[in-house]
Amino acid sequence: MTTTPPNLDPPAASVAPGECAAPGLSYLRIEYGLLFFALPALFACRIVEVPFFALLVSAAAITGTLLLRDRSFDRRQLWNTAGWRRGILGVLGIWSLGLLVLSAIVLLLTPQDFLRFPRERTALWALVMVAYPVLSVYPQNIIYRAFIFHRYRAVFRSPESMIWASAVAFSFGHIIFHTWVALTLTLAGGLIFARTYQKHRSLALAATEHALYGQAIFTIGLGWYLVHRLAQGT
Image (tube, rainbow, N blue to C red):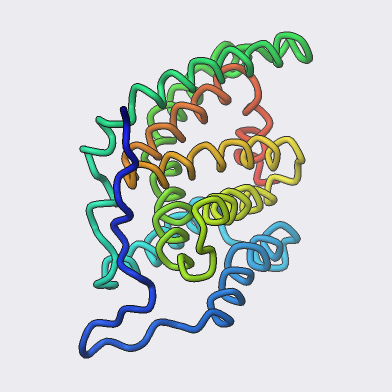
């Protein structure tokens, strides 16, 4: 029988001696909306233009620093190998089924795209497979899993609402690619990754799962347009 590990976060209202009180709920709601919806919309409309990876790394550095400076945040969650070991088999099982479903979709709808990326752009595909987990996946998990789950825990009090808050923000962050396919795939993935993080509180496990799905999508043909748009800056 499996049990869900206890929530490692202390109550949001607790304040250590000498520390400032936590922001109020109204402030946190506004902050969440501005950071995860208004700001991506500005980038998508090109009202604000910043190179994609510069934006991602900067955001991860800022949110990661805020977490490390917050005494109420359990730093073990930024990796947590015990949680990784506890959950990896379940992650691999669900990922295997997902890979079969996604491959079938590509083969049925756009068979010409199946394995197109590794066949036609082998060197770039290999680079993406190696660099993507480090440069993209882990920074995104700092922002959309660790930071959101901790920062806005007083706003989204139930586990289910917290999972949706993380997933919807993650999905909307991909509006910069200007395609509903990216929004749909990342919403589904965001729900999966957020549930994994909610259950195991291991960013290593959530990032591993995120990387597996992302690498599969790029490989089987669903991620080709993302690589193309990113490479072309469109």
